Image (cartoon, rainbow, N blue to C red; front, top):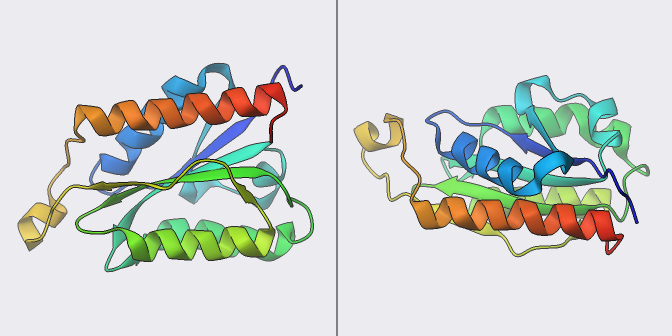
Amino acid sequence: MDENPRLMILWHSRTGASEALARAAAEGAGAAAWLVAAGEAEPEMLRAADGYLFVCPENLGSMSGLMKEAFDRAYYPLLGQVEGRAYATLIAAGSDGEGAQRQIDRIATGWRLKRVAPPVIVNLAAQTPEAIAAPKTVPAEALVKARETGAAIAEGLRLGLF
């Protein structure tokens, strides 16, 4: 059992939805939470985490560019160094979110991470240019799900379940 696990909540947000999800997950994870903005993430930071919660918007059918850049910076330096670590995802989307989800899962497969919670995709139904660019308010039930996801992963890490 790890009394002080580190759950890195790696996030990027343009309109506030993914940030709200990340902060809710951090509330749920409590002392284990380590919020890291995608633009600040470095490979050694990811190496120092016991598990990961990847939180981002889906933009144009894929993960946001800054989230992709965070993975680009860390992917090869971490190959062979993070196998078996826990991960989960929270995606804020205007429609289905599946493109971003697939991209993150492919990266996680390459790192040989272990998915420990089902994907959470929050469909905010933003379909017009104005709605897409507008600040977002995340529904309360989605924030609850994010909190529960953060809490469950932190507890699993603490108990040594993954």
